Image (cartoon, rainbow, N blue to C red; front, side):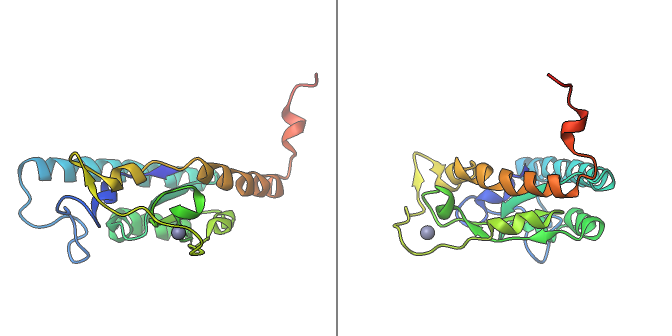
Length: 175
Ligand SMILES: [Zn+2]
């Protein structure tokens, strides 16, 4: 599962480096902002190359980012979208052990990802978004909750077993 931290600050943090009008980067960025943008672009370029290779090798891969992240609007992701025709799912972190109602979007070349499409049921309290000692809560919520990888792993493994014509056990040494 691929995760980019760049977009975690877009809703509640420092000024964004991109916009929907300028997904490749705001005009006139200089200094540290320009360096951060180039670093993110290098990461996105590597992501695009890696995912295309995985797609050709029929390997399940998933990209997870905040739903509102502008990664989804970049040319890097447009290329990935064309190459993989992914499934897009929307979930709320609070339903997977998160303290806040963060809107997260895993996109995958496997339909199994749709098992994570779980929105908030409203049966719990949400922690507020705030800044503590200069640290944005979005940074805390960027970490995966304990339950999200667990909930994602099982359907992925199930689909692997369905798609594998040769049972994996045949390749294992007999004990
Ligand atoms: Zn909730």
